[in-house]
Image 1 (cartoon, one colour):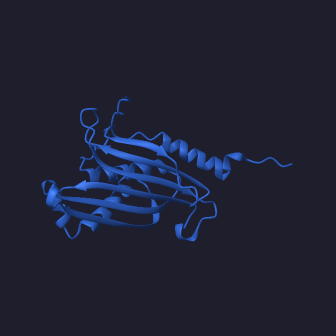
Image 2 (cartoon, one colour):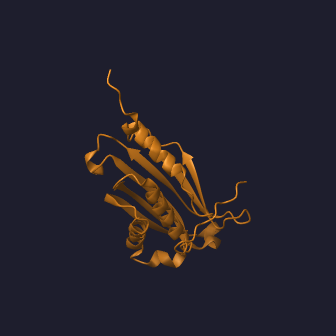
Image 3 (tube, helix red, strand yellow):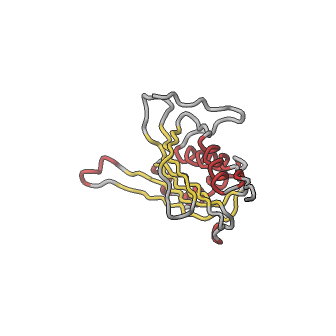
Length: 196
């Protein structure tokens, strides 16, 4: 029986990608959590959720943005993916109410995603997605709530190569942009959030 190099099997490659993603450290305001992944879309999948909190301390844990990051791997390389790997994401945040009046807000939301991917050296191809913003006004018993604007960015793309941590960092960067957090300066590393 010939020997088989298990280091190049789809399972071992996917397991290494999962380990790489588990090693990602986000800035203190971001809480990453692994959650059950969709099981019918691809033979291999992993999913993370993220919550961006108002601060990195326990005094103010208001949620500013949230989302989901899913990595799919199908060695059969489905044609729409144009490859064997696909990242599927969702990001949601409340924005300043006056931003809801901007007719270019959806275009800006999409550009934030593309800029995040480029800024984190996360090469990709075959992007697709939607950007939706909703402006809500309270009436009657809810008239005190005023006007609110929410934005949702749903996107998927095929990574070029297996440097998936760069794609996760880019997506977290998008979430932080949606949440209104200032970018970290070049060379500054965020300290991890203390465990409770």
